[in-house]
Image (cartoon, rainbow, N blue to C red; front, side, top):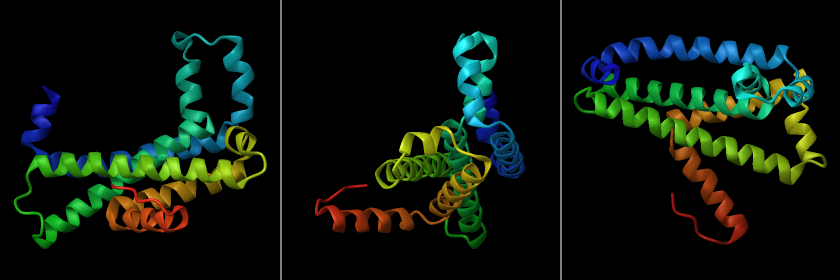
Length: 179
């Protein structure tokens, strides 16, 4: 029902999605700064029931999941911006809702790949990968969240950036990847 209304009124989704996603990003980012990940583990182990409310709290505040959500949001924001720019310039044909939703999903998928590249890069490069990702200080969290968010937003706007990154990885590895 809600999806049908949204599909018929894609312009409403365009107008409401941007401020909602920005506010959600600010809220998640602030939450990630204020609640250190290292404090979450003992509290979650004491009562791991998903119905206790602690699972939701942990998912929103733990560095890995928080940064994942931030990356997905900024990828969607970048794709929304790209969609609106193409629509404004007349390059996207009629502003159909199918284009909007496929653009948003594509942006989220590209952002997820950015997140995976960042996490795997952190694991390869740092001397204590698990601690740097799960026990991040507020300063480290800001660096991690800002870096993944910026790159997720950029690949949402310009998907070609991700293609270039994969091409560079292919040169290093010597194998061909298809995206």
